[in-house]
Image (cartoon, rainbow, N blue to C red):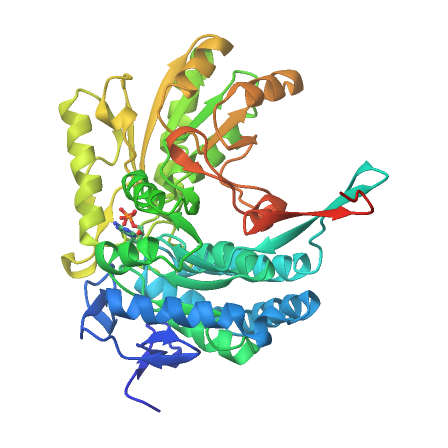
Length: 504
Ligand code: ADP
């Protein structure tokens, strides 16, 4: 075993070999600059591992490997059905290691501010399901034939772009890896993907499975690296044909600018400040449970988190009392390993500081703290834990109302009429998700149509599904991922005109 693997044992007892290199051409290699990333367990603040971090030169090597792989017959001439089989094989290999993957991401991320249970119930099934699903799409890409006159017809081909550069965040490291890599490969592209600095580990174990599944060298290249250096080098590289990014709106805007020089195709999934509306005819117990999960799960570190909760005035007091009770009984804070833990630490000190800053801003802006409003001391006083926080007496000019906090901080606000709820829901620069609670069928569909968001949940929140398209309105993104839309996004249409006798 080379020195680019280290032996680790997760706190819940999985011993494994953790790769630490950059994965290029199906091999782990050292970074050319000697830069590294060290990752911590956010519950204990103890170091877990140090991995190689790509420089712009390494990004160039990876992109060239992906370009060569795109042109190589081993990938280009591989029948689409075989491409699909490779994706399905990968999903099976991930499934065999799902406990290990959940453990690594709970640790690193949680890890990531993520509990082991959440990783097992949400992240891994999503990852496995996405690879299997897009394995099925690989040989279901159809063009059209278009008749024009007896002397001419045309047909269309859906073709891959070439090399896709993909940049992912830390909140769901494996699921978002799958959302991006699976459709890109199904459509016949090759990939260079960069993980987030905060969660560099699980993706390298994934790299070992890419090779084991049988993908030819260079088809999937996996890098850790810093956003401003490796991320920027990837988006600016002239051999990258399409960029796909999930992360903050600010970084998304920078990526859009850097892709503009070459008019590169882009898909961006960015921030949110999603509304959740509870009408007085809702099943209030269900509304309380979903709205609690909608803002507090994964420590509030979800781009679609329903952080602005609007409740019709005549049920407001009852809802608020039940919501506070739900926070008290369900939001159990602890480390990643207890099955009772609902809420782990925020992913890093920087994120913890950011959430605490917003909580203090909320207080100074005059909002009322109904729950939490302060840090939580972990074991030995360590760890980046924030108490689940609920604010009331919030108005639309406050920073906590307008800006994405990305932490366990919910706002509960009364409204009077349906049109007021719609206006409040749309009173944001974002448009990623929205939830509506009502038992009135007509009202539910009517409001869903009016809300400016890429996803609307009727009587639930956050239940993402790889078969259903996902993306943002307004500053929450460009383009769509998942479902057929996600597959089509990695193809471009070519029209072939066929002259059947229109001679000059
Ligand atoms: P967050 O604030 O949640 O960390 P970011 O948008 O900064 O979100 O990061 C998401 C991903 O984007 C990470 O993989 C990060 O390394 C990468 N990134 C950050 N800055 C840039 C940049 N200027 N160009 C390309 N990628 C970047």
